[in-house]
Length: 378
Image 1 (cartoon, helix red, strand yellow):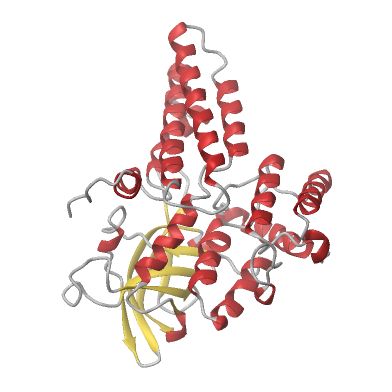
Image 2: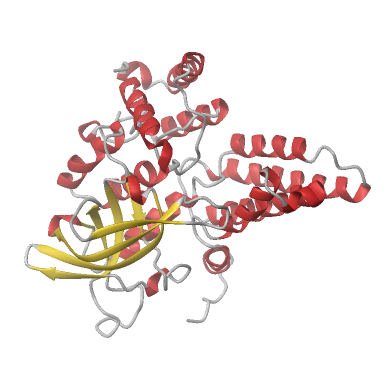
């Protein structure tokens, strides 16, 4: 394990992180960055990489030592993710475990919950998924209908979740379920609770979802009278909406917010559209790169702690990537309608408007919480 006292110096820690990543790249042990969500077929590779990070002192960097962390600062974590962006290496196994679940546990978890779950996340022993969206509750998440009925020292979960990343390879999931019906609590976002669910529990069935790209990045999860202990409740009963909103704000603070990652995207975008010959095509490329540079500067103002302002970055990056995919397809001509990277990018592009909080939700957050506009009518 690394020297904790030496790592307290941020510059020394950053230098060690850069050296570690360079050595891992030279040795061939550093995977190519898979982004926020590890592809299911690469989960064994991800577990091995996370174990290597843990052994080297680059896991749970700002978490308390007693829960498997290093006890350093959020600035140390930001330095690590920056060096990973430079090296194009994954900073952690997956966002759901290391950002969403861990962040929620640190904010709302009991000492027992932190001790039970955080060490396994840091070491890569346990993979987590997110059980939020439902067939009838995507953008309007507060309309979820999955129920959790209290039964003595346990809860009984019943419902269906969809667009679940890493569900088929996960050991645990973070789950939103209604503990008060809408009849009991007429405000939709009230009466929802936040649970930590064992994905191997009897009554849970996971099915891959085939997308129009031909792949199956996501799963749907069927929950049929699954009994979980009362200790699975994270935060106060009926107050899970607040836990979830803190969780999703953390997620949006990591999507497209690193200026280094954005600059690399812009460089690739410029290279991919280098064949533009007409003035109109060149103007299109210049516009995309200009927007990207503005988003990179906006991301630099975000800092290491997420806020609702990160919705600006999320919305901007989503639309930029969509427009860039369309531009690449247009530049490819007829070939852009066939198989290949340009066609695949175009077909996958609409998913960005859904993942990590839909475009409509981001606009509402920006309007209501940043601009102070009236709330969207229910």
